[in-house]
Amino acid sequence: MRKQVTQNLGFGLLFLCITTALFFLGTIIYFITVRGVRILSWDFLTEVPKEAMTAGGVAPAIMGTFYLTVGSIIIALPLGVACAIYLTEYSPRSFVVNIIRMSINNLAGVPSVVFGLFGLAVFVKLFGFGVSVFSGCCTLGILVLPQIISAAQEALLAVPQSYREASLALGATHWQTIRSTVLPTALPGIMTGAILSIGRVAGETAPILFTAATFYMRGFPKSIFSEVMALPYHIYALMTEGTHPEQQTQIAYGCALILLFLVLSISAAAIILRQRQRKGYE
Amino acid sequence: MSNPVKIKVENINFYYGKSHTLKNLSMDIFDKQVTAIIGPSGCGKSTFIRLFNRMNDLIPNTRFEGKIYLDGKNIYSPGVDIVDIRRRVGMVFQNPNPFPKSIFDNISYGLKVNGIKNRHTIEEKVVESLKKAAIWEEVKDRLQENALGLSGGQQQRLCIARCLAVEPEVILFDEPAASLDPISTKKIEELIEELKKDYTIVIVTHNMQQAARISQYTVFLYLGKLIEYATTNELFTVPKNKMTEDYLTGKFG
Ligand SMILES: Nc1ncnc2c1ncn2[C@@H]1O[C@H](COP(=O)(O)OP(=O)(O)OP(=O)(O)O)[C@@H](O)[C@H]1O
Ligand SMILES: [Mg+2]
Image (cartoon, rainbow over all chains, first blue to last red):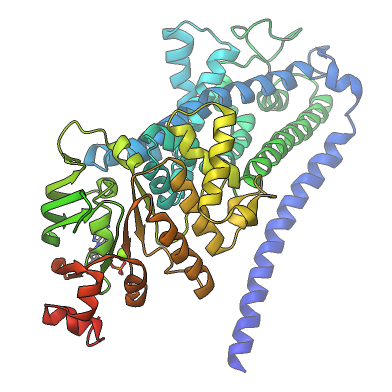
């Protein structure tokens, strides 16, 4: 009898935890939607800002965030996967490699504003990319690199050794084994890491503050070396500057809703992609 | 002992870290014969055959001493092409390990990594290998399905087909039926019976009846040492060593 009681208590507690988590998630989505949906309109999505940010749309910020997110993932994903392959498949398990692993993990804990300053010093100034989409993508790419490396490493380590042995036993080279067996098997796991990074990148403000973002633009960026507007930074600017807090707050909620939607839809697309990949491997 | 020697093992020692797992083994393996390796669990049977295709190279912190000749060439001499050795010496593992790919891709994999690009050739080889491994009838209508959907016994025959596709000269079987039911086991045994005409076969087995049924030669290992090596007939009827006799009669192991 006592066992039964303990068990029920345990389940009850777990149920409470999950409902609490879901409650907060639901509240956030509800709150942002209710507040943001009022201002949403076709013009809001497609127009440039007007009258000192108090009217018009936020299209440049939407595009900017989209560019920055996609660009940084394009930079970070191949680089991160390559690093992970080297660390798990090639490097001997030596002292030096352990130090490298530890450094990568620590890099993940560095505050994002520090990455922003680094980006300013290196990409904007030293390499001369200026405050631009490209500098922003590089900075954000480096920001999520550790996360992508760790996720990819885990995915690679989870590939059963028996697959590697089977491949090598057929006369495949080490590289053929990695390319044709290990990587395809690890891909769903790697994609999961990439999906998580997308959410992170899209929402970051600090790394693009000095490297890519501008408060106001009349049109869209002309090249990857122009400045951009971005949704998170736009929200920040709307809430801290300007003279018409009333209208600006409304627009900020609209931006937040769009950002939420953008992140969710990029993630959804990635999940669908991953599911497709997985089908072939389970 | 009429057939020529295919693999010559000369004074080999093998260490996992500090533990001395194989102790000064020497023996000859004859061409187009089935050689069975028997012995109690942990005596080093798997470790031993994994030396023939250099699979133990993958395990860190191991050390190998001695020589293993394949057709008279030492496969452990520096500069030897390990990839080529592994193509010539195929292996079927204890647990079926098909790739998480389609049945067709499982077989074509070995062909592709060995540089065969012609689609027609590949298709022909896939069918031929599946037929040789006696699994063609069961899978011919589902070549594009994932191999992991097959039963354990089918998966193991698929692995044998995958191995045959690259045309090895030697096939190493590490307890190929250990995880299978009696009917699948019988099928695998019949298959080996068939394959011994064309290939040199080395098979590790726990099952002494199995060794007696399918092999011409049997070697008994105990604690990393070669205790006795003879024709299967001799070893099972008139073992020379007391330990072999005790093992065969089930006194230990
Ligand atoms: N990767 C490894 N690292 C360290 N020791 C190992 C490793 N693989 C095997 N050993 C040890 O080497 C010895 C021989 O192992 P091996 O797998 O060759 O035995 P086996 O005869 O194939 O046994 P079984 O019949 O159970 O498969 C055992 O004592 C085992 O614990
Ligand atoms: Mg074994």
